[in-house]
Length: 470
Length: 63
Image 1 (tube, each protein chain N blue to C red):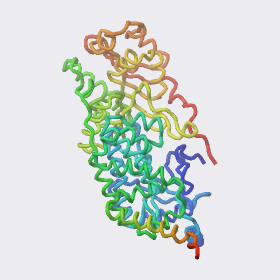
Image 2: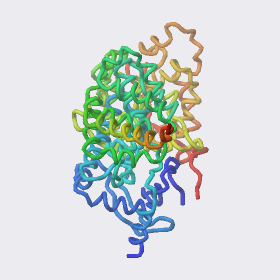
Image 3: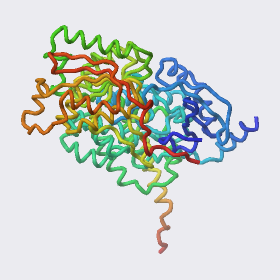
């Protein structure tokens, strides 16, 4: 049985895959808790509203007392790839479900963003094994984790402009209370929720580290119950809902399809893309450098799902907000630097997998982006070609030569040592790896579109990653 | 039926600690952040601890 590399901490439930299906094994205890929770009206309503993943019972198999099959999420993403509004929406979903559970006598075992996945712009709670019955004297066991992985990252962004992605990628467990206190600083005490959730919690953590297992019975005797908990969680929800971050204007946030294209060039480009993607049904398309999502929306007409990647935080934030306002569920926007993409990391170097591992594409669109990787990030053309071919998908890319105004800006303060960046040299890099299905010139030849198919079939096998576990 | 019985026994016997450490300080902080009702619970908790300490103190020396 090959378990999901990120599913190992909870002995009462683990996720595994078989024949492309997503399955969850529950222990006898886990099964009892899930059966109770899933029978509750709040649970069923959340599934109907698509806020909670759908599950169906399957025959038990050793060592699990109960096996559930879940509907599949088109592309798995991680909180360090989400923008501010995405992280906040996932946090609000978590708190709302915890409040609904509390009212019905249940609680969540944890409070981690890895319990939430996005289907397009819709957050969905996936860890159904996290629900359990509330015991006397219990408080929310996920509160500390929620603060470390949701609240503090959001506060640091809202109050100090500090992006959460690098931190959450660098430490999966998030930000600790004393770290948040140190970075937010005393002036932040004026902001809602900072005193109690940051400074007071840091203080109490330091003072009570040695408290033992009797705390729950002490709390029960002192009158801790769901009403008090709910009151606290509603206040926490207000704090989260009130956190705001407006993305600063960047070089990319106002950029559209491209001011330097003529109308006929733009039409030709759009038609080229449409014809390529529509040639056969696509399961998952990647849009590299998606910016305002103009082409991502075209791709979504012909693909089951689209991953819209952009390395500019402001552009990404704007894209998520506009897609969400339109109720878009086919396009998932992620914030990612293509020259420094999400790696395999965590326990065993595979707990959280790289993007190609968890969301492999069958169509890739790279418009007006490769010259940034070559001339901006310095990745040689042969390496770019190898990387694209390794994705194993039909690809449409746009080559912008050094005469192009955008490329000229990238070279403005540098020596031009980029001998491999001409159409001929680029095509030479593509030739051993791709079959060129179609080629078209735009903008008087300074831009060239290619529709490519990788030679040698499917994606390059990825090293590392999950191993079979007992 | 037997599985249900076994599960019930398991649940009754288990200390019911989930896999994640909620953190003692965080458990208390959660209540502190819950407004007046939460503070009341904490006051009762600390008062209970003071009472335990007083009960455990040695009796005063008799003259």
